[in-house]
Amino acid sequence: MSATALPIFLGGVFTAGLGVIGLFFLHFWRQARDGLFGAFAVAFWLMALEQAARALLRQISEVEGQLYLLRLAAFSLILFAIVRKNMASRY
Image (cartoon, rainbow, N blue to C red; front, side, top):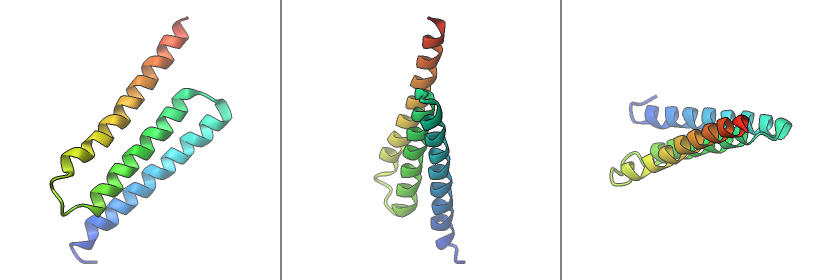
């Protein structure tokens, strides 16, 4: 494998892994109907989308900062879901 193909290959591996993790959380959400699992599923798919775009657009440096917005959205969604779950358990 050449040195230029390795980052693309690893990006695909990470994308597939994040997508599978999202599917696991979707499965748990379907069983429990807990919004926390749904939020985690969407967040992992956002991270998979960010990783796929990073692997495909690795030569274009102008979009690199914008790709972090997907990661920011994913982690913000996780944080919001955790806070919402904790607030709901108090009442």
